[in-house]
Length: 195
Image (cartoon, rainbow, N blue to C red):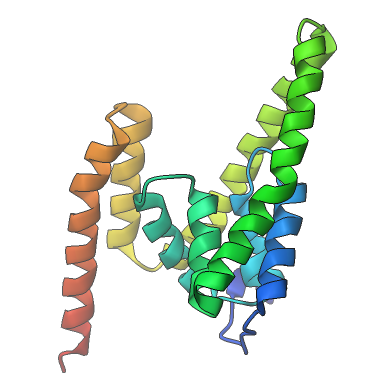
C-alpha cells in the first residue's frame, strides 16, 4: 500500500513564490479560513503550492508559536520574509488580513443586531466545533514528521500535559521546555555527526 504524497512529504522540487503569489495565497487563506487558518496554511504552503517541506513548515511554526502574537500572522510574515524579504512579508501579511478584516467588521455589525436569535447562537456553536476539528487535523499532520523522534514526542506530550491538563501558564511552560528542547535536539544532532 503506497503512502499518499501529502503524508509522505517526499523531497521534491520546491517553488519560490513571487510577491504577488504570496499576497494572493494568503488572501485566499484569509477568505476561506474561519476559526482556524493554520491547518489550511500548511495545506497551501506544503501540499498545494510546495513552497516548503513539511519539516520546514513545522520548524517555522515552532518558532512562530514561541513569538508573541497570532501564529498565522507570524507565519505569514516569516514565509514572506523568507522568500521575498520585507516586501514579501508585507504582501503576505496584507493578503492574510485584508479580506477578513472587512468581513469581521460586516459580521460584527450584523451580530450586534441579531445576537439574541437562538439560530445565531447555534451557528457559532457549530463553527466552534468545526474549528476544533481543523486544529486536531493539523496537529496530526504536524506530528507525523516527529514519529521517529521519541524525544520530540516526549517534549510535545510534556507541553500538552503542562498546558492542557495542569493548566500551567503558556509563557512559563515555553520558557522551560523550549530551551530543553533546543538543547536536546542540538545534542542529539551533534552526536549523530560524530563517527
